[in-house]
Image (cartoon, rainbow, N blue to C red; front, side, top):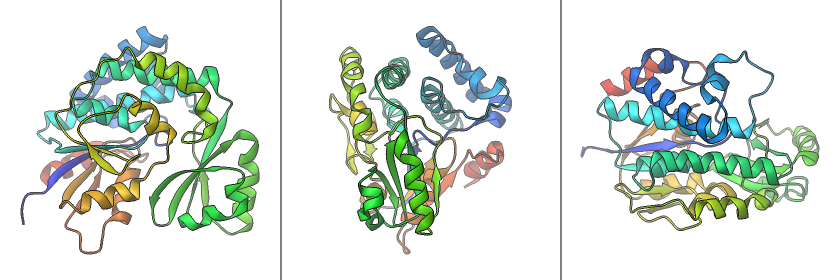
Length: 313
């Protein structure tokens, strides 16, 4: 069988949790070096010590402040990508879902890591300054479920991850009603640990200040193609509004994997904090696919063991 190409997959908001990547932070010098380097940059940009928010502060009831979680996700993903590169695992394609598109675009060579982290922080600041609080709910159900009035009239479809997994976004005032209706219909759901209704009209007020900032951020032609979950296509050039559209428009993860599968077989490596994209990918792959999906990080830890298994494979 021909050698499979490698896809690095980067997830977005909702994939974070306290102490994500702690095993690597304590024992992997490359991961730790990049986390500390980016933490210094984040502190200079926002005044926030992101590493402290992840690892040092006693666990609070929630970890959902966007000015912390936005850069935290980016930093963990970029640091893990650098650790993989140092270990000799190099991507042929990067895939970004929502916020994960910042790390995907950076690893693919479209922007400098310093500029990307500044953009991530600026986007978080725009959400906090301009948007009312909202939320997102992951739903175990077919996309047709969204046609039901109790969902359609109170939310927007934010993501289709695989055939029986969608995500909806809604204002804070609608979340409890949606969850009650899902329970009445015996539908399994989970509220994500986010503060805003990403991928919906309820974040539109943040667009102008964010895009004003982005007009000063240089972008270049990438060294790798990027699989965009907004368009479900491979891109080598990024539009001027790329970094807004990937958090505003729906995530088409299922379609993106289907498009890649038409081109060949891959080793899909989840570089996100929770390993959710690897799980989604397994549900998306055709029965006869020669592709494989691999997670490294998860809330259960054991990242070094997962990394070692990946290197053996």
